[in-house]
Image (cartoon, rainbow, N blue to C red; front, side, top):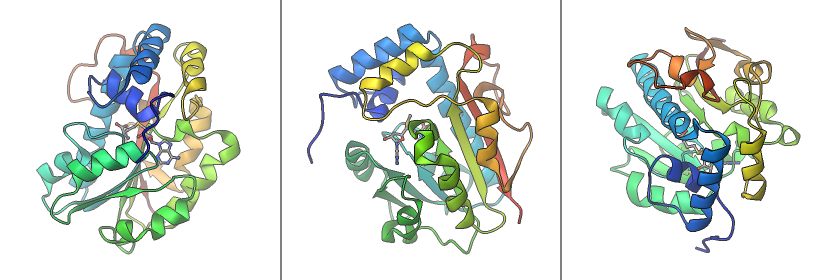
Length: 257
Ligand SMILES: C[S@@+](CC[C@H](N)C(=O)[O-])C[C@H]1O[C@@H](n2cnc3c(N)ncnc32)[C@H](O)[C@@H]1O
């Protein structure tokens, strides 16, 4: 596999901000530039990760036993299947990412005993994701699925039609399925400098307002408290300092019809 160390990758920048080791000099420089442009960036990525865990506990607690995690990121403990299997050891997870580095690391660390599979595929081709044999190996689309789109849709431009993509994925899911989504926003602070950091990366950062994020949930019913800044979505600990500035919306919703 050819590893591109000349341009920062979103997964490796995120890994660096989370304190991980799977990143290169070019990613660390981008991570530092991001932290300089958005002082709460490190708190924000941790808060996003904590949201992901609370949301996974919620959907598994609601009875879902299969998770389709698109935009997995580099393995970060606890990983989705570890959090899910604390509640229900029979939960199966398909991890999907379009970054070959993520795929290689995920393959080594996340594939375990037939309950998870790792898939190299692109969210921009949702049908290919749904039809992928390694997704089908662990996900039965006749049973409720939790679709995770956590901190990934902001890497799609409007021209790439993220709403259509989410709608196509929704249509592949039966009633009783869940959507777990988080998305970067500039609603709480000017983040144009942070956006500029990604202009040299392998994917651009497309901040969206509340009014632009809400329609991703069309066809789903948001569970309480609705779309919230991630630290305020069903917190299980006091929100960290600077939570009010954190530029991530998060929400969990159930497909009813
Ligand atoms: C910021 S990380 C989020 C990781 C994890 N979901 C979380 O929230 O902790 C975003 C991930 O989305 C992946 N990604 C970006 N664009 C993608 C696409 N078009 N298809 C699949 N994955 C994509 C990146 O490679 C990266 O691993």
